[in-house]
Every structure is written in C-alpha cells, then in structure tokens.
Length: 330
Image (cartoon, rainbow, N blue to C red; front, top):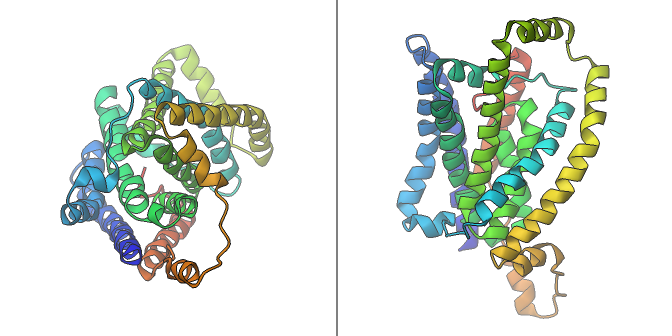
C-alpha cells in the first residue's frame, strides 16, 4: 500500500514538472499578445496546479489527504515570526548561490508590482503560490506520501524537489532548505495551514520590501544615490564574500532562535513529543523474521517518475544558467 502511494505522489510530481514546462511555453507564446505579467503568472500557476487538482479529486477527502487541520490562533503570529527568523538564513544561502549563479529572480515581481497595486500583487505572487505549492509539496508529496515511509528522509527529498521545481540555480539552494524546514513545521503543527502561512509570509515580505524600495527610488536624491551604487556595484567575489561574512552571524543566531520558537509552537499544538521523536527515535534491532520482512518491504521514495521529473528540472536549470534567463517559477 505504501509503495503504491509513493508511486502515485511521484507521478503527481512528474506531471507537475511537465505542466510547468508546458505552461512556460504557453505563457511565452501568449506573452506576445498579453502584456499583463500578473495574468500570465496566474495562468502559469493554474496549469501547474492541474495535476494536483486531479489527484485530490481522485483521492477524495481533501482535508485529510493534505493535512488541513485547525491550529491554535495564537500560533499564527508565531508562525509569521518564525518565517521572519528564517529570512537571514535564506539571504545567506542566496548570497552563497551567487558565487556560481546570477541572481535572476526579481524581474517578474518588479513587472507585476509596476502594473498592479501592492495588495493585488501580493495575492498573485504570495497567496496563490503559497496555497498551490504547499498543496503539491507539503500536502500531496510529503503528507500523503513520504511521511508514511520516513518523515526525515521524506522532508529532505521533498525539499530537494521544491528546490528543483524552481528550475534555476540561484533559487535552488534556499528553496531546498526552506522546503525541508516547512515539512518539519508540518510535523510540529500537524496542519498544512501552518506551512501556507509561512510560505505566504516569505513571499509577502519580498513584495513589501520591493514596494518600499520603489517608493524610496521615487525620491530624487535617494534615486540618484541608488543609481550611483547600481552603476558601481557589480557584485564581485570580494563583495559577495564581505556580504556573506556580514550576514553569517545574524543568520546563525536567527536560525537558532527559529528552532527554539518552532519547539514552542509544537508545544502549543501538543506535538512537542512527536517532533522530538522524529529525530531521536532509535532503530530497534531486527530480531525476528516478521520484523526483518516488514523492514525489507518498506518502499523506497525514489521511483522512475521521480527521476524523470528531477532530470527535466535539472535540464531546465542548465538551460537557464546558460541562457541567463530567469526560471519558469518565480
């Protein structure tokens, strides 16, 4: 049963990758006639979500399938704070990735923000992806599949898939780590609503910071300073190294505080012991034939469909790196 379930969720992953590739081609063609980047992004998201939607309709009982459960109201601001504490780590990983990959991810957000209000931009770039992507990765792949086999291995693999689906090297590293962390948050709270809140917080934070920078740029004196910095400051390896060293202590301290807060959230949700057990449970020695047989029958998480999806993503990452264009998922 578990083996078949893993195969099912890996097929959803593969078809999501194929849908993303198809959506990128379609959106590219429609972009010749449609100038609204927000509309194109929404179309892209809907197409990518179709495999997940079909799977959910096939499975039935959507709430149980993806782990929709109530969480204590007091945890909502704590989850927002938790995501904010992880932002320095994400920034650190982003800087590390810039040593070997150009930062290409801001163009789409800038175009959408310039053509729409901040509120509508947040809906398109923060709310919709937070729902759709969490349903696919933390809901279908992890909750309905991998965690039944191995929560720790499943979290790491789910994070890897989340990074790969962004299809550009710059986003891969921090998306990988974030994807695994969100699986742990799901275990700490027992609800995918928690990971949606955190995902939405991160994307909203990026949009608000971009909006504020645009407002500052409207000031002529500040715009002149920003322009001078932009002309002079091609990010050299030395500058990246200095930036890395300045962010590192903040990222370490904030990440430690984040995991302390995560434990507090798990305690509020009544899942502290469950969370600890995921990382402290020792394997009991196999002493009986039945135990050995059960262990041998435990399915692996990687299937043919998983490999196909991963190879397609890696191929696109290579093409994006060579061409210097942003990934198909922003």
